Image (cartoon, rainbow, N blue to C red; front, side):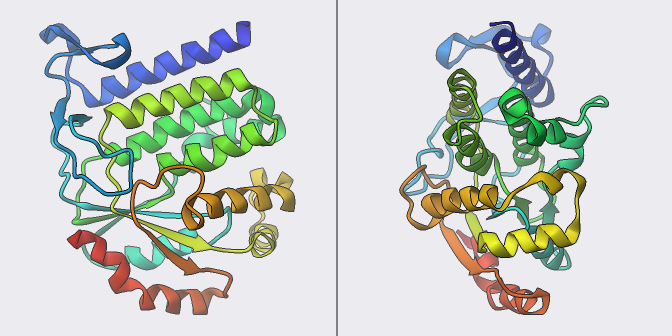
Length: 284
C-alpha cells in the first residue's frame, strides 16, 4: 500500500508539472472545473475545436492546448521496435528544410535528479515499471506540446506507443501489477481525453525481432545489454496488433509501413522513395 500511495503521489506531481508548464499562474484567475472533478485555473489553457479524423478516438472537440501552439503544423511519429532504425530515419529527414526533428528524451529517462529509472526498470520492471512509464508519458507529452518551429514535426515514437506498446507489454507479461496498470491507464485516458495531442501520420518501421536483436548487440548501449530476444518479439507483436492488424488499440492517425530489415544504404533509399508520402502529411 505504501508503494502504491507513492506512485499516486508521483502522478499528482506530474499533473501539477503539466499545468505549471502549460498554464498561467492560478492566483491570477478563478478556477474552472473540468472532467473527473479536477480543477484547472481559468485562463490557463484554451479549448479548441480539434481536427477531426475518421477512425480515431483521441481527436474530439473541445480539448485543451498550450497557448501559442501552432496546430496547423503536421506531426509525424516514427514508430517501431527497439533498434528498428528510428534514429537513422530522423537523422535522414533532419537534413530537409522546414522539418523539425524530436528524438525520444532518453537522456531524461537516464537521469532524473541523479537517478536512472530506465536502467532500474530493465533490472526490476515490477518495481520500477510504473515509475519509468509515468515519467515517459510526462516527457513525451512535453514533446507533443512544444511550440512548433517548422511546418512539419517528426517525433521518435509518441505518448500513444508508450501506453499501447510498452505499458501493455509490462502488464501482459506479468511484470506490472494490475493496480499500477490501472493507475497508468487512468492517467493516460485523462491526458488523451482532455488535452489535444494531434498526430497526422504514423510511419511504422517494420523490422523483425531478430534484426533488432542483432543491431542491439552491435550498438552496445548500457541499458540494452539485458534485453533478450523474447522481449523484442513481444514488442514486435504488440506493434503488429496495433498498426498492422489494428486489433488492439485505437489509431491516432493513418499508418505508412516501411519495411526496415535492410542495411543502411537500402534504408536510406527506402526513405527517399517514401519521402513524398511522408511529407504529404503536411497537406492533410
